[in-house]
Length: 515
Image (cartoon, rainbow, N blue to C red; front, top):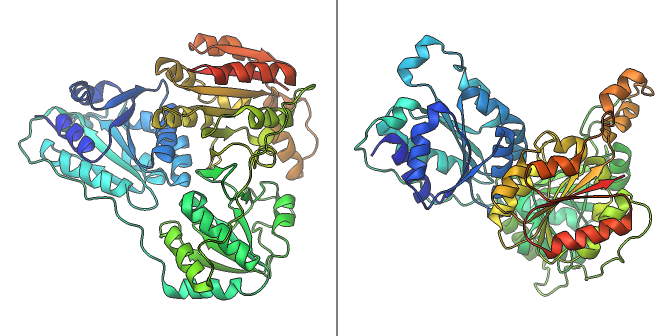
């Protein structure tokens, strides 16, 4: 076998059977090796930012890494923004980045670049498979790095001659996924003491926003009177009927300060202490009250679920205590004018059970949580690193991870244009994704940010940089050009009809909601 075959075999043995790809010449032997592996699902993205975003969405729902295939340094660079989001989401991922043959690097060919310097800011681990004999072991090391709790980005650089060269080296095996380290007794005792007082808030992040861990957090809050909240940006939250309702730290600084007012002790469970997204003149950068004490029960890489269970035991919280799960209560479908609120109400009224909501609605979707707390049970995925353009590929990857579930993408129009190519992949793979475009024809959030930073009112030049209406984007034609059926709606009644029809069928659909 050659080095590329060894890489495929090692990935498959390590549980990686999906490869999101946008290959080039230096990766052709790996492409040929993938062609010999029917167990590997290969998914083409038409832009590397789509490739890395799909791997992020896949990892969030599958809870295991996929591979990406990227072409040299420039291909990696095109995917960096969504690698940033994936890193912030703590998504496990193995990037395979092709490189020139080792002996060709000296010629400084046009596509030669410093791959390691490009990879380093967004990768927890970088490895070079410089020879065919080293490929399998390097791949096993990459898989182990990606599966390190709570999930890491591993980047493996594969020179062309290491891929095409023959090897007789034995295949390496990645070790089993490592368990998250347990939390020490001191942290549990300190959190218990704080919860016996007043004004405590449990701030949750990561895997404790799902399953039994979220229930346990609900029981602790019910027993102690503590508040529950999620950090502002989260990879995945289980929400809706039958789940413990958790609000998020608001994005807007003033709203966040109000939400956190009166907190005496902030207890972090897989979360970071809340900070403002940006610096604003005259506003604080940290959002917890200055007098609040901040305790860490569990770091993001530690066993937060085990820590909550131990904390409940320390506090004597009964296992049968009601954690405060939400009941099922759908709103009536909206009528009349089409507003961001109407979109949220329509989704809450019509979404099926166990839908996956992928949210990059940015400013238009801030009321979604309020209207969907009692909707049918669903998973909520959002932009985590602030690098826009994650939404379409995130939904695509989630749909590949969960083929039996409806995926609903709530998508700002400006952000969608960064990675609209993901619609083509949805059509090619026949993915069950319904995308709702919030078509306000502007970078609406930036109008608010211009005011928030004290830069004054927008004039002609500013509006030319913030508006998308001259010419307006033809979303129906754009989607249909990628092979996705599309509908344009201008009032809430039409939105409800279009959404009901899309959810009743299978396959991708796009709805342009003109706001």
